Length: 356
Image: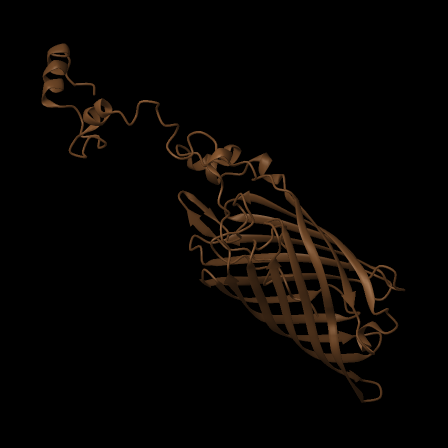
């Protein structure tokens, strides 16, 4: 039973409103929490260096299988721990779901209880391509609302990250009977900002490699931020293909940004078939411990103009100091002086208006 995913949140910066979702910066770190909840899809971006983030959830699922004549009630607890490791584009994460399943065989009335991890994995995610890395190509247009908020074809170009990790089956796990203790998992995650309010995420994973039941898994998620940047919604489609289990699932949910470091969420979902029929819901909470510090950049490594431009050779001479001495109002545009107005009136005395 897995519910974990992306919802991305919105933060207004100048004229841009972007998800805390967080992903439009030119580094991985953002001012607000960037949680993968409430869905199952995984963002292409990392949390940022020295950021420790916990994403927790509790869920309930009703699962009925017509062919096997079984009914199941499942309570689950979810935990995801994420940490920005070494540099901005790298993240280490742990994902675990502990389920308590009560299964009833309708033909015999026998009840079986299964309790163990349905998900228990550790992996690394690394960003290999970011279309927003170059700030010069992604500056906001101060003269056009449409240029900033409208859809453009280049918005389809996604950020791309790769994931490599492993599943761990400890002891006699009833959910994965016969699986080895460790099995690899690989994934590609992409993320496109269609507009400042819409984000498209896709994941393709090949799971449990080397076992008797390897699994292909894909997830496509579309998130939307409201005008109030603290609220966002998402819809998600997931496909699972394996000899052990195959299904198509649909989820939807809402996320609310409580503060820069806290988020709450809820999601609902269901399957499209009756072998088994699945209906599930989950509540979640995300919190981060922000220890991020921007790296200092040496002066010799900075471009000219980043700190007011180059210093003139004679800038410190006395005559220049005297020339620049004033009341402090010389940097304020106070409009034309009286003398300038008299000249303009004389020049334009035949005009009905004065062109400043």
